[in-house]
Length: 390
Image (cartoon, rainbow, N blue to C red; front, top):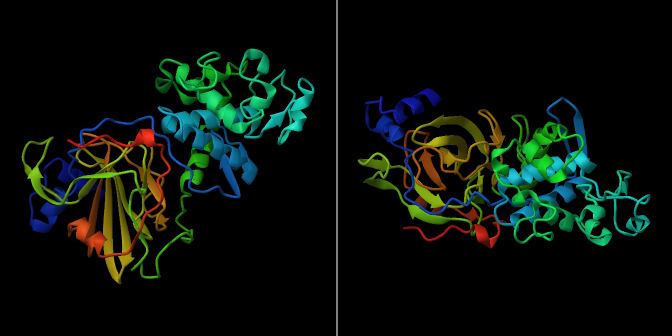
């Protein structure tokens, strides 16, 4: 299927109507709104434990308390404009390196810190908390720095941060998005060991995936499904409630990139870049690929009402795809995030439905209207809502 898609994207397939429908299936949306790169993902759940491995092969085991602190960082990012997914990862890498995601008191330097909720006693100069921030460096008072939410807000900084740029948080660092994430963490932490942070990037990725929506392995059994065994009810709309705006429907239209009339074989939903993309139903990933037209693409096969149904999700954000070909996914599982890759004019999800297999696209909207859908809550801040569609 991947080779066929790439041929279709370059216009090299000339065949019957079914193949032509496949060749034209994924076309760009018409939304030209602003790209909200600063929208951070929201927390869907907090696992009891998580095991991950650093870039240099060290096994890291985290419990629910540590993951709860990670969730605080993610939630703080979601309420802070312009942090985005990359900023969350930088913060998680910093907190993992500095404290292993523990709120550390420091009774040697600050005896009063023992009077606040904490996960252990540190002894690094006068440092405190998740990010090992120092009151004497101006990060805040002992009481403030023993609050995980305050520490996360101070780390992100920005115009609404508690320190107003002094000391600078991540958003106060010019060009931080262009830096390697480990280097970006160092610009805030100013550590004597600047090379430590990079090793924790894969652990941070695992944490963020687990908090936003755990990924099932090929051998896992779906446990968070909302439907009956045949998938006939309780399907989940592919974007969180309140996060999207419909911008283009099914049918032939004048393509804004290719300047010709083509079949638009799905529906476009404009949403901020980074918005979670959810699996409609339990299924299997049958294609994970990229082409010039659809950008990053996922295709899932499901059994719904006793029939094979394929769904397609296109223009997905680079680096956001959390599944591989052959993986089993659960209803409502996050499989990627909204992007604007391929022939796209703005961040949106192009969504298709193919009853009987991936050569028979139909209008998704009446099909969706005929099924009971669950709408997952949208956790992004109001600042991430896309503007009006032209």
